[in-house]
Amino acid sequence: MKLVTIFRLLPVLFLVSCSKKDKGELQPTLGTVTESVYASGVVKSENQYTVYSTVNGVLQQIAVTAGQAIVKGESLFQIESEKAALNTENARLAYQLSQESNHYIQDKIGELETKVQAAKDKLALDESVYNRNKNIKQYNVISEVDYERVVLAYKNSKSNYEATLKQLSQLRAQLKNEQSRSNINLKINEKAQSDFTVKSAFSGELFDVLVKEGTLITTQTPLAIIGEKNSYLLALDVDENDMVKVKIGQVMEVTMDSYKGKVFDATVDKIYPIMDERSRTFKIEAHFTAPPKQLYPNLTAEANIIIRTKKKVLTIPKSYLVDNTYVLVNDDEKRKVTIGLSDYQHVEIVGGLNATETIYKPK
Image (cartoon, rainbow, N blue to C red):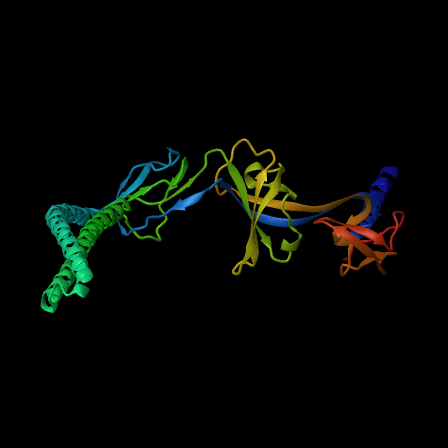
């Protein structure tokens, strides 16, 4: 009979215990509350960038493979450039032809330089004769007709010298322009041809090749992803409502799916001062204080940016708040409380409740 009684009582005791647990009774506890801002994003390599071509065409050759170390200026891709090569060759021939033509112009310049010198000498002579006759004219030593001939000869010499000098200047300018024009045209075509060879902007590691040989690519086609080897940062997004709280130098706690159960410290070191209108977020960058042993670009990451922390304060679970203002005492009686800091699980109680009182979880 006793055994039967015990077994009959056990369900009753169990029901009583469950009833208390279901009510969610608890008392406030002393703890630490940390105010933080949530951010999410990915791991990126330092100076990570996507490679694009500056020209359109068919991808003729891929000269690299994913995971390969890259040096600055190394050729990565070759785009079909037959037309560009022909244009360059045509410009080179035009340049050579202009060089030959320039020899003729240089000969003409030499001839004109001789004429200029002769005109200068004649001008000097006629000017000397003119000055002498001008001085003696007052003594009626020379007739008016002869004097006018001297003046006319001087003026003609001066005009001839100035005209010949102007021709020489124009011919020299023509030679310079011809040389510059053909040289610039050749350089433009050589540069256009070099654009069909896509090169690395700096040394690092090639993380991925995004195209295949024979593909028709445009200037909008991503070709590869390159970044610094073994040097990573966190590229994170912060909601516009929280952004005013974020400052450079703040510490954050980072979690990643690749390292479940582990938390890494990082520091905010860059804030982009413009909001993305589509996502309504701001971009920030952070560096690990002690990074994980192995990282890869585009690993997902979540972070809590620490704004401030309070220790040894009265706290209750957030789930026990009603309308973010009240708690339940005496099972179902609402009492207004004053709250302080809060995190994702707990909230600080500043007034309206003490550590000895019992509160109940809202149903």
